[in-house]
Amino acid sequence: MTVWRLIQRLGVAQWPLGLAIILTIGMTASALGLLALSGWFLTAASIAGLAVATGAIGFNFLIPASLIRALAVTRTGLRYAERLLSHDATLRLVVKLRRYVFDGLLSELREQPGREQDALDRLVSDATVVEGALLRTLLPFIGAVIAALFTPILAVFLAPSAILPTLIPAGVLIGVVWWRRPGYQALAQQIDRDARRARERAIALADGRYELGLLLSTDELNALTTDAYSGLTTARLAKVKREQVDRWLLGIGQAFAVLGLILLPLELPFMVSLLLALLATAELMTPALSVSFEAERVRIAMQRMPTVMPMAPPQQHMTLAFEALQVAALPGQAPLTMPITRTLRPGDALIITGDSGVGKTTLLRTLAGFLPPASGTVVRPDQIGLVMQSPWLPEDQLRQVVTLGLPDTPTDEAIWNALETVELATWVRALPQGLDTWVGSDGVQPSGGQQRRLAIVRLLLQKPRLVLMDEPTEGLEPELATRIMARLAETFDQQIWIVVSHRPEPYQVIQATLPLLPLRRNGGSPQDLPYTAGHDALSNHQDL
Image (tube, rainbow, N blue to C red; front, side):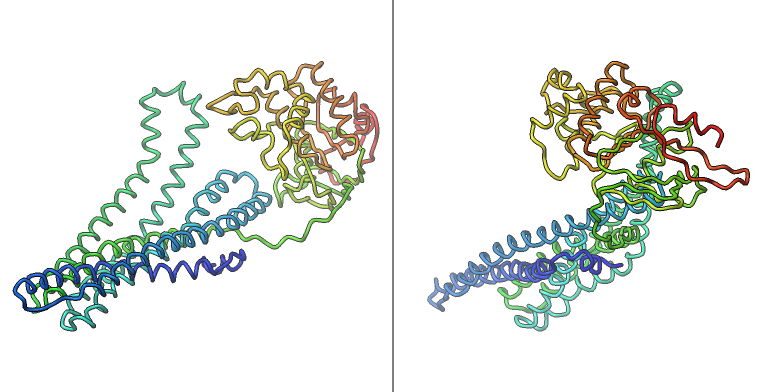
C-alpha cells in the first residue's frame, strides 16, 4: 500500500495537499525569478547609470522595479500559504493515521499478545515517518525539479547559447541521485534495523538495571549503553559522510556551469541574471539528495502498517452473556478451562474463584475483549472498565493519570469524590501541588496499593456498564480493603460487577461466585459449571 492509497483509505481531504504542491511550484518559481530579475536589474541599472552620465542613453527602471516588488510579495504570500497548507495536510493525516495505526496494533496485540514494545515502536517511529512523507520527500523533490529546470528555461529566453552550461547541475543531480540511490536505500534499512535493536537493548538494560548494578561497575554499565547505540551511530555517520560527498559533487557541477557561463560572450546583465539563478538553485536542489533515503524509510514504514478491518458499529447490550465459553492464554492455544455459560444483568455482582493459574485473569481479559474466546461466544456491554493486578499508570500530572482516555473530562468535584471512595483524598491533598502533582520517575512514586486505588479512581470516573477487577484489594490492610469494597458495592449497584480475588473482603459484599475449573485432560467430556451462591461454592465442586 502506498502513502497515496493510505490517504484515500483514511478519508483525508486531498485538496490541501494538491494546493500545497501548486503553491510550492509558484513559490519556488517566484523566489528564483526574483533573484534573477534583481541581478539583471542591478547590472543593467549600473550600466545605464554610467551611460547616462555621458549622455548616451536613458533607462526606464519603473517596470523592472515594479516586477521585483510584485515577485517579492508573491513569494512571501505563497511561502506563507504553502507552509500553512502543507502543515495542515500533514496534521490532517496525523489525526487519522495515529488512530488507524493504534486500532490496527491493538487488533494485532489481541491476536499476538506480548509484543507491546514492538507495537509502541511502530506507533511512534513508523507513524512519524509516514506523517512526514509530504514534508520530507514530495515537496523537496518538487522544489528540486523546479530549481533544476528554471535556469535552462530562463536561458531559452535570455541567451539560448547558455542552455548547455545551465543544464550541467541538473544532469549532475540526476546522475548523483540515480547512482547513489541503492546506497541510500541500504542505509535507510540499516538505520531502521539498528534503531530498533538499540531501543530494544536500551529498554532491556533499563529493566535489568538493578540486577546489573550488582554485577557491573558504573563504567561497565555506561559501556553497555554506549555499545547498544554504536551500530546506529556508525550508520548515521555513514549517511552524513555520503551526503557530504554528494554535496561536493553537486558543487563541482555548479562550478563547471558557472565557468561555462563566464566563458560565453553574453551581455553582462543576462550573464549576471543567469549566474544568480544558477547559484540559487544549488540550495534548492540539495534536499533532493536525501529523497531516496527518506522514500525508503517511508516504504519500510508502510510495509509495517497494520491492516485495520472495518469494525461494525457497537451494539448497545445491557447484559453480559457468555455461552459454552472457554479461554486460552494466547489465541490458538488449547483451552484452559471447562466451558461456562452465564448471563449477568445490571446490578449483578460475581466473584470468579479457582486455583492459581486456572485462568481467572485470562477470563477477565477475554470478557473485556482483549483475547478472543478459545471456544464459545461472549456478548458484552459496549462500555467496559478493567482494573488489572498491576495496573498501568502514565507518568503525568495526577489529574491526567486518573482521567486519561475518558470521553468527557470530569469535574474536580467528581475526581475528589472518587478519591474519597478509595481513601486517597487525604494523601492527594498532602501532595505539593495536589491534583497537579507529577506522578512518575520525576515526581511522586505511589506505592503498589496506591497505584491500584488510582486505577480504581479512573474506573469510577469512567462509569462503565461492565466492571472487571482483578485482585482489587491486594496490598491493602484488611480494614481499609473492607471499607473500600463496601463503598464500591454501593457505587456499582446498577452495573455488572465481576471480581477475581483470593482475599476475603470481596465476599463480604458479593455473595454469588462462579468456580473456574481446569479443563479435564483424562478423556472425560467437559461439562458446563453451575452458577452458585456463597463463599463455599468452590468446595461444592471439588468432585468434578
